[in-house]
Amino acid sequence: MVERGEVILEVKDLNVAYGAINALQGISFKVCRGEIVALIGANGAGKSTTLRAISGLLRVNSGKILFENRDITGLRAHNIVRLGIAHIPEGRKPFAPLSVYENLRLGAYTINDRDKIFRAMERIFKSFPRLKERLNQPAGTLSGGELQMLATARGLMFQPKLLMLDEPSMGLSPILVNEIFKIIKELNQEGTSILLVEQNAHKALSIAHYAYVLETGRITIEGSGKDLHENPLVRSAYLGT
Image (cartoon, rainbow, N blue to C red; front, side):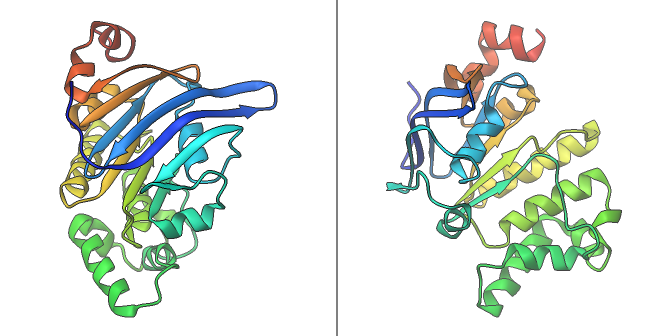
């Protein structure tokens, strides 16, 4: 049995449907403070749907989402952000004509304190030095890896308690994938709790404290990242061994 700490996010019996299609069928899981928790599974399993439901972008049919023991089910997305949840969606869509600096400032729209914004920006530059080099460059001219860094940094600008990342390695070269996962691990070590949706199961499980396997809208396996990495069923289905 894996010992886990204080729960920051708990999803209970969550059901989400797209018309007649049940995308999530009563899933339950939790993220504890200071953890990296991975959701792995095939395309269409419901991973992105889960994040979108938590962040208020999709209507929940039934079940509960609790954040720091507060029921946030049905709250509007902007109110969920203000509680301390940042959702970095798949696709890394920047405000292309705006500079890197302007994109980062938009990430701090909930903060009115200039000193706090300055400190957040300094922290970003420490984790993402490449963005400092590109500060005045239009975001639309960045490489794929730089766009992922910008998307993640923009979500970190208001210093969230929980960072939800959807497929951060998608479309990146192996070198950039390693760099992104190194940054994710460092952010976690600095105190950010992370819920990670990732098709690269090997990389996800290598940094996850705990993980869940999602299959056609249901959680079928759970355990520590290490245990799932060694699980024969997981290895066969998702690790290619």
